[in-house]
Image (cartoon, rainbow, N blue to C red; front, side, top):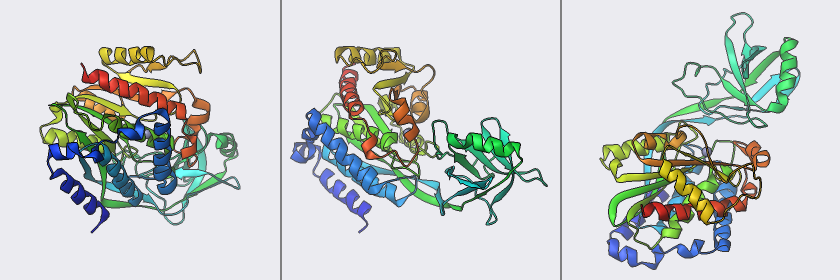
Length: 412
Ligand SMILES: [Zn+2]
């Protein structure tokens, strides 16, 4: 029996005992895992080790993602009586060989964008030109762009994403680090040639999944709390977004064994890094099942560990005020930098994975963080985003804030 099948069957078997029996089961009280600060630190370290160090990169459609999804489902099954892998199909992408970007006698670090077209075996060749915010390699005869070279926002080369439906999806696209920009500008000035080699493939009808755990409440009204569980292909993704996903699990443990007023759904989404597919799939599925209207509140975490200042994106004034008063009441003053309030409201709409939920009229907050920018932001979508780079204070603060937030919105 495949492991996933086994998991599904064993979960179904435990559910067959009925809600009362499973509720009484000591297996479904996992509060002890997160009872005190030391328990929480230990839990975070253990899960980061499992997911980031032992498994590593977990990109959409990869076997590593599937393995991690099973482990995450097992963790959720300790906390809540109903757990499932919510599968969906995607056209996956896989890099088949190390990329090479050669210019001006040097080989530069680069990563192809996830979903990028790839050059033929001769490579993408031509003269390097400068464009707004990027470089391009242009065939001197045909004047066609043979490759696009994006520049990392924060530091060394990172991955990116190409939407296969976009206008330039046929152009092989890589990203280089900021440290190589001056060198490449000189190469443009001296009309140097450049070439890019890599091989990739698309996998039609690949499968991936969201991991969903439900704690039944007294009513069908529901609170959905989620964080993406996938990573880019070149990184263990400890800060983006594994630590935040583990905070979702910790919150599930914190409510384990209780019967809250509103049903609570804890979710890890698949394929966020590739076009937000998991969150979009789940909202459509709930719409098709005619249960989307049950979801009254939605909370989305993406990278809560870039610093002690939570970036709160919401269009809901009452929820914004609740976040503010929690910081006040828990005395979570930010002594790191008085110029940053600990709860900072990012101006503008709710973005990213939370967007379709806010669009559907669900009261949504979407969170990111800042404060340790210099140390943390250069890790983004990089191999160095490892388990040891997650700041423990951000984990503990986030747990305390959202444990309290969930209790307050339960009472609304
Ligand atoms: Zn992310």
